[in-house]
Image (cartoon, rainbow, N blue to C red; front, side, top):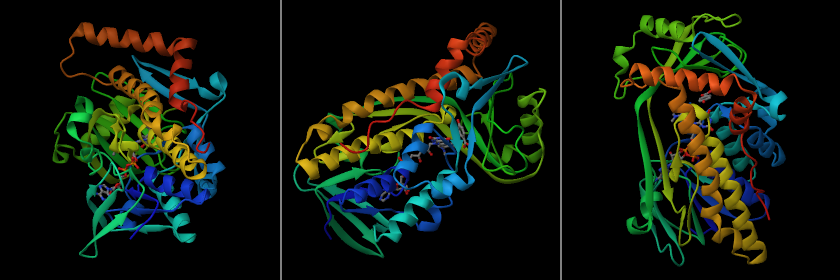
Length: 393
Ligand code: RFL
Ligand code: PHB
């Protein structure tokens, strides 16, 4: 089997890349180890930056999104007994949008399928070879080992994929921070406490109230690392949700059936450079962030814009400029998102080893940022997202 760009992974990064390349007549094949049903029902991200939504509109991927997504002009924070709202629309003229990752993955996969795009599900890439000349990807599909020959490999296979480890260890530098807590993610059949997201700092830990629709709440509770789900009875969950939200005018916690609970560890990670030979890493395969800043999927999409521009310029104009500067261009934005995600995480979570001084300092930091117009604007600019690079030359 042969194609121009071999893409490993049908997450937001891989699917968007294959769509953008298709719009400019460049062929790709996407290899995905999981099934179509799995990737279109896996609950992960929910929040999209304004630029992400604008891009999806520009490239014809936002038809369903525009029907059901929930745009938010503001975002709310509680700490030290107060509720603060950042009005992003007023401060910076931009907003964020709630639309489940599994829905945008489905929209992209279905559109690729409709125009004859090749996505092989249950096709696990097991080896990438000849990265410095004509690459090939070995994969197992329907029990058979096969080979995909290509000009370039896009490693869009997430944090646990095969692409990053295919960059020789002596040419790669990894930057890593593990946080001493995780998130218990809950999907609840109940009206969310507010129409907007509420991030809560509390003496018993962080909580976030998001949503997937007007009737479905998506909530997260900070939990100890390596916490077991068995320790989280429904009673304990409701009591922590209630306590961490606190009592504020306009916020009310409605109980409902808990449809799903999952614990996720929290980590920051960057692998540099994001390119080796003809392999380009995009999205979680190259970097991850703790979800407090809602940046992971948005960053994956930002990488893909840079990569599609490079590949289009190469195929249309034989120009290597954007491909040669791919890693450097992406990493500038990646590190800003890493910083923002780290900052939101450390400012809003309770560190279990913090002493009373640390706690008072943290509360002071929250007042410094959220009582200030300049502080609120800084949060708004980063939360609603930095401008994207153009996806074509
Ligand atoms: P993905 O989505 O992990 O997709 C990678 C795909 O590659 C496949 N794969 C392979 N296929 C073939 N052969 C192999 N050897 C393969 N190895 C792996 C996998 O099956 C998979 O389908 O990576 P991508 O495309 O880079 O997208 C990244 C995003 O998924 C991720 O950053 C976000 O989910 C992060 N995230 C959030 N991001 C946001 O922008 N906004 C949010 O609100 C937000 N909320 C979140 C989040 C992540 C969370 N968790 C679960 C960590 C909330 C949570 C709780
Ligand atoms: C979500 O809706 O899943 C979500 C929203 C904002 C975050 C993290 C997750 O910061």
